[in-house]
Image 1 (cartoon, rainbow, N blue to C red):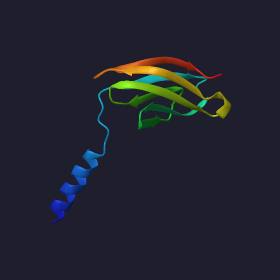
Image 2: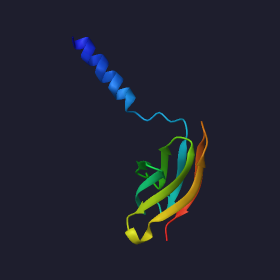
Image 3: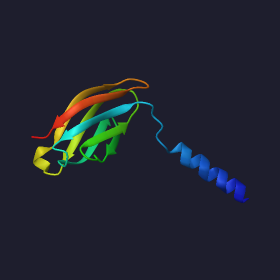
Length: 98
């Protein structure tokens, strides 16, 4: 019986993980200016917490918007029309906060 429960837990854990081979990455300037970065497409949204101003978000292929949630909300920023293709990561470069 324990083996059955363990098998169910393992299968469930794998079913809910995101396994994308593509994504978006970039840098925030200033490096301590953002709390979170979001990749948004339709109903899909995936967050990342920047570390030393750098972020990487695994996403499926498609066209995405990148939203930078700044420490100072008046400095939030958007990058529109970020194209992600299968098995590649798209570099959005440096996103300068106002």
